[in-house]
Length: 574
Image (tube, rainbow, N blue to C red; front, top):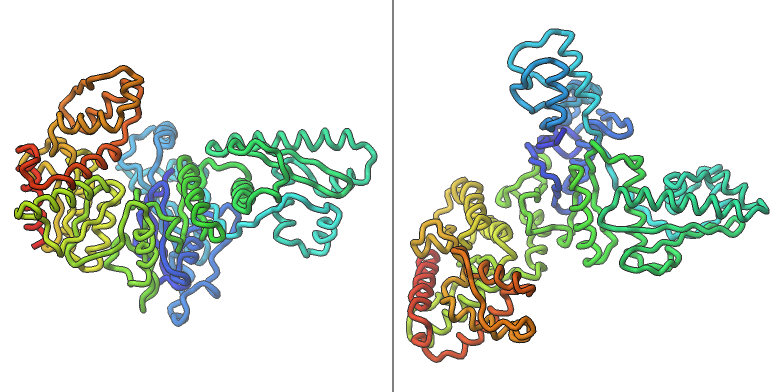
């Protein structure tokens, strides 16, 4: 069963969140105190891993006491059945399914209702309906919410932890150790007894077995990171040694980097919260990575993407490095208003301070410039930027039409990021012309930009086109490199890869196919065992163009096509 969207109503600072579309990995972005935690907790209580009902006395929105109603639904969520569930329901009812969508709700009175009325065309008998409801409740996913990311240093005095446990004064590190012991199949009281035992050999045997148990458990869960755990003990003193595939040295956990300690503890706490059983769970993480440095946050983001391969994962953040602008379809912005917090995909619906994280992410992206003008050209990559600026400069030296001085070019990290940057500009009421490659990614990005922004907001200043459209080539695949002749482009390839081609004893590269020039070169080089980087060739072409005195030095077809592109950019941003 897969969560597709949800909404929260009458819960703390949220009056009506609006429908929130959910992807495999969804991020809720917003400033502090915007309502990110409230949103996640409201969803979590729909069907929590551990029982946690809504509390109307504490969680009903303030200032609206007279409207309190125990029957008020807090969370409404829509789920889509997976193939196995559809098959099992068919077998259970002997009926064909009309739909594969169900809606679940929970109110302040803790009534949990699954509406399956859309599944079947005909009205069900009471017996079958009960069977369907029972089946859906059994297979309904549970929600795991995490906001406590404790770090375990690795060494501990077991008898002292036992004393603090008896006195109910456990520290966060104590609690994390108990978690690790439980996941390893160890018991604190038994380990304290063993600490006073003379049989050290048997004790170490048990610790080795526990180490292997946890290591195997981790291997099953975390495909992206391989840990090996080893335990040692000296009396009441307990030690944890950990190594990973990147660093094979077996050293104490507390002697490793803070980032490593955080990740190790996070992985185990994550596993513990679901008792190691991630199947059919929806993971909700509140502000993960707060204490990691930017590189660590990027590593965490990659890890979350791995977690989301098997489970829907939703996390909140106000950290720019915790956003993946290559996948903007998973970003949701939460903002507050006089009517309460709400969530939107639309930047124009959110307040400036709520957009700050997105602004910062755009500014910190290695492929993106955050300097904005009133007239903006957005292109897919830095190669487009290099070629267009170099050609425009050449045309200017030749006293021919060049790019208008007011136009600012922003290079993105691909078609999807180009769309997101464009929407950001439109949200700031800036004029943006987005120029995309004519390939599947470019066509998809264009359609998304038109449907979600240009049409919806009737923005006549901004526009989007693919290169093939600009040049009247219909739907032909086309990228910026295709403005150059194959002979000229291959000459630069030979220069950039002279050494590798010499080793391969290749004097001439044979191109095949009718797709983009870059793809044809990449395919030919791959057959030679050479990894092709178009950026290396682009640098040589840019240098060559910058050294030309007049545009007459360009191939005639290159000059004609380039002039047409420059003219269209000026026209669109006039």
